[in-house]
Length: 172
Image (tube, rainbow, N blue to C red; front, side):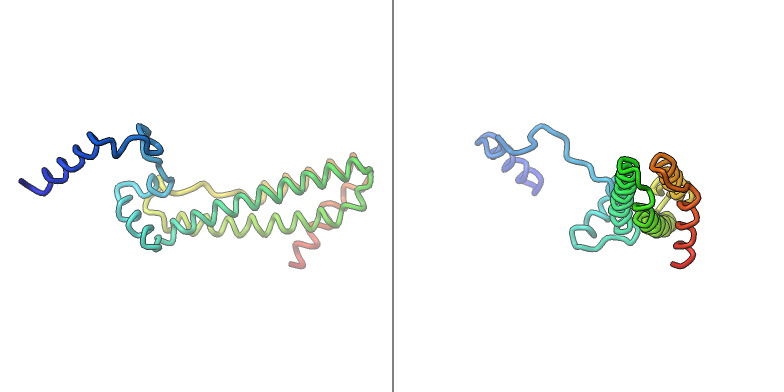
């Protein structure tokens, strides 16, 4: 009897005895991980490295990028909430400094994210594994426009939004 036949017979006996009944996920496909899909034909090698606690730089960087995206979304939500608060209070001047600070933190986080995305794409094994990069200027302008609308609705000078934000960006 070969090794494979021995293993198959033991598995068949265990199945007949009900050893595999009621296991979580029974009948469901194995969960797919993003890193395995991105690794393509080399997924098994990457899985072995991952189990050993060693991932290629581009896969580790992918995890960092996801966390940075979440942080960027949090900053965007905070900015939107602060703009809404400025409009509700009809006191944009009282919120202008905090909005400017938040905009600067958003821009710094977005620039760092873009650098990581560029590094990720340079080390990814193929173009299918690469990720689209964030357009920092577009998103910063979007936040500035939101603050400008809040300034108009909140009774503040619209020019203060872009002037203060650009001054603090130059200082950092």
